[in-house]
Amino acid sequence: MKHLKKINCIIDTDPGVDDTVAISLSLYDAVMDIKLITTLSGNLSIDTVTRNILHVLEKFERTDIPVAVGANKAMGKEMPDASFIHQKCGLGGYNPPKNVKTKPIEKSAVEAMYDVICENPNDIVIISLGPHTNTATLIKEHPDVVHKISHIYCEGCAPYGLKSEGKWKEYISFNA
Image (cartoon, one colour):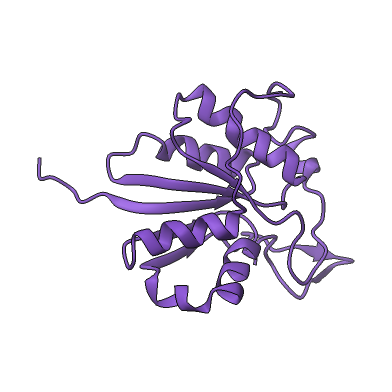
C-alpha cells in the first residue's frame, strides 16, 4: 500500500449526533492528523457541546487532541435550539456524564486556531461541521490567516430545507 500524506486539520464543531459520528470516524483515520478541535454553540449550548466532545475524546482515548472553546452564540443571527433533533444532551438517546475529566485548553478557539495555522502555514485544513462563527471570527480578527489556510471544508445544507408557514426560509441551513 502506498504511503498517504497525512492531512493536518482543525475540526470546528457543535457536536450533536451528526458531528459526533463524523469526529468518531476521523479519530483513527490513517490520513487525518487532527491538530485541534474547537467548539461553538449551535445545536446546543457551548457548555453542552464542549462537554460532548471532551467525553467522546475520553471514550476513544484521544485526549491528546486539544479542545478550545469558541463562540457561545452565532454571528449575525439567533440560532434555534436543536434539542428536538439531538435531544437534551445533544447525543440522541445517549446520555453522557455531566462532568468529564478532560478540560479544554485556556486559549479561545479563535486564538488556538490562529496559532495552529501559523505553526503549519499552507498545511492546515479547517473542517467546519457547525455554524461558521469561529472561522468567520478568525478571519475577521486575523485577516493575514486567509493565505495560510490550505482549504476550508464546511457542512452547510439541509437536504429538505427549513420551512416556516409553508414557505422556504431565507436560508436552508442551520450552519450557513
